[in-house]
Image 1 (cartoon, rainbow, N blue to C red):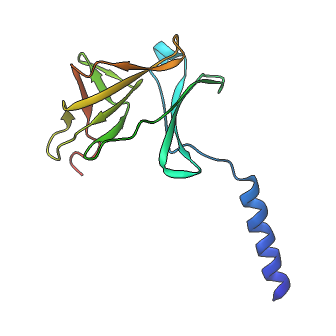
Image 2: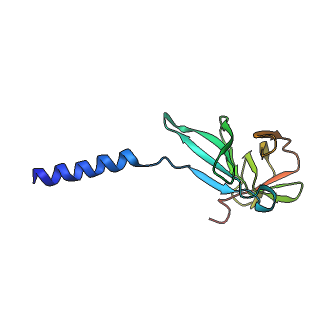
Image 3: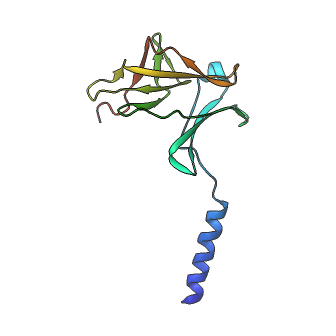
Length: 138
């Protein structure tokens, strides 16, 4: 019995040592504009309430990285799925106040656009931005 326990413990420890960190969320940008670049949201291993945004090239090279700003109470982070001037875009991260009975929220407080050319998450004016409420209808 002791040998079985040690064997199982060895397998568990060795598998955890080779486990790869994974993003909390990740999605492709518009393939026609970005060639397959993506945004990934990575948890901070030292603080599970903190996240880092990463813009990743199609070849998996890191293009840009930004610590997620603190999210004010009552707001949520929208990962893509925002309309900017009526155009649905996936290259947007936004702080939004959603209401349960609305599919699209216009109460957008802060917006960043993943810009491959600038190699950065660029602040964007939240006027004219609406974001999909992922909790709508649930």
